[in-house]
Length: 141
Image (cartoon, rainbow, N blue to C red; front, side):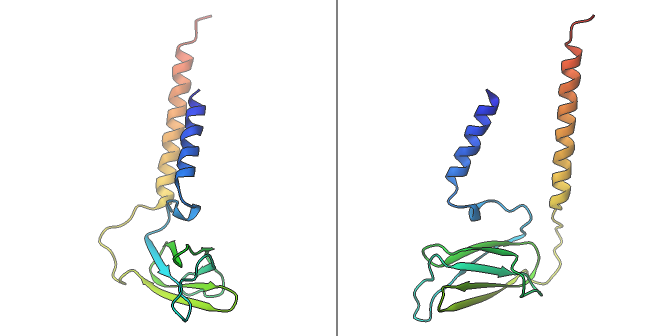
């Protein structure tokens, strides 16, 4: 029965999100929003977008589609000049965004890998204690 409740909550959360692009990105340090428009100022709605990391304009790190207003949101995992490119067949629009201020931050962010590792250790501990509890409740032979 608890598995059915978990499944129901997971499906509810899945349907509550507008799109997978709205999902939380554990590795992102900044969220960037760009808006694309044609030369005459009309929004480039529902067009393919490619995002390129700083220093690599040949391999897109993220892809997606703009919304009805021509907006596209993506998360970045490091500072630098990020480039987003939208194509609608006849036109290409590019946006270059400087992420971060270039200065080192006094606050160090916790590594996502460390966080996942700690959660894994807690899961193993929970399973181990559950095993010990079930073992102690067994009737003696």
